[in-house]
Length: 166
Image (cartoon, rainbow, N blue to C red):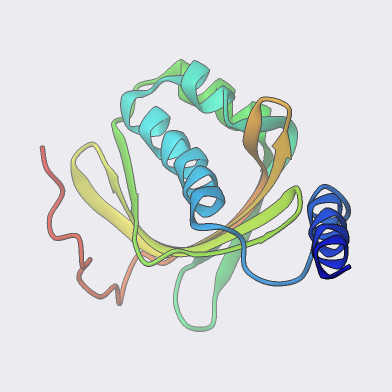
């Protein structure tokens, strides 16, 4: 009888794992897959490879930026993921974005990554800020559906990653 109860409880737990998402933290492996999608996005930016970036974004998604000119003044800009891909494919600028200390939250097929970053254009520091990416798990894997980020050209603490490698 005890064995039957154990098997029933184990079966229910296994079936529940395939059902609706449960509260709590995702596995480290799943978090690594989410972060790998974001890193692939950054790697594609660094190499100017719009095809690579296109593998990890949903074209219909969008990005929203908040550029701080100073403490009282800011501007915003919105672009679709496809517009970003088109600009990247046009080339002409060497881009490097680096993240550190990301926070990853996953619930079923939805994930969020919140991370500080620094940004370099043509080898020179441009700005720092915070990225917030929303990802969805598709049949092909995790993809960035949308993102929002700050652009902070001043008052940036030194990156814990040190200077970029050239």
